[in-house]
Amino acid sequence: MSIQYISENEFRQKLAGITKKSELFEYSDKTNIEESAISLCKTLYIVASDDFDRRTLWEKVGNSLIVCSAKCGGDIEMFVSQLLESVKSDHQKVAQNKWLIEWLKDVIKKPKEWHLAMIKMCTDKSRIIIIKSQWSWKESKSKNEDETDDKNL
Image 1 (tube, one colour):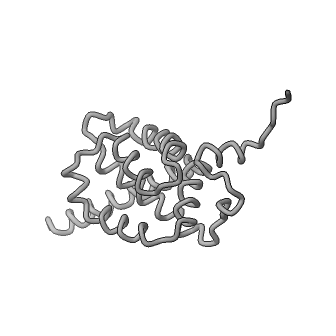
Image 2 (cartoon, rainbow, N blue to C red):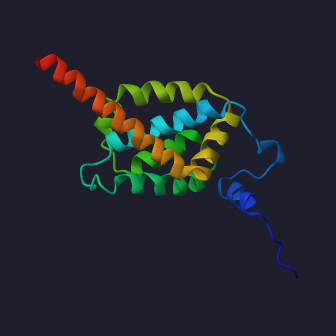
C-alpha cells in the first residue's frame, strides 16, 4: 500500500470541500472578490465583541478566515456565520449593521463559483486581505474623524 501525495493547492481544495474538477473554478473578476473579502473583514473587526483586545483582533480575524474556509464546505452563508461567531459578534449588532445586510443580499445572488472563489481567496491570500482590510478600516476611521472635525468648526 502506498501513500498518495497531493499538492498543497489540492490539499487546500479538499479542506474547503472542493473535490470535483468542475468545482475548481478560477473566477475572472478577482478584484471584486478581493474587495468583498476586504469589506467583510473590516466589518468583522467592527462587529467583534468588546472582549477582544483590539491590538490582536486582526490576527483573530485572519486566523478565522483560514479555519472557517476549511469548515464551511463551500457554503458562503455558513462561512460568514462561522466568521461572525469566531469574533463573538453580538446578534443585535450584526442585525443592525446595514452594510453587512446589503453585502449578504448581494453575495447570496452571486453564483456558487463566485462563493467558492471568494472562500478560496480568503485562504490563499488571508494575510494580504487582512493588511488591506486594516488599511481600509484606518482610512474610513480617519475620514469619519475628519468629517466630525469639520462639523465642530
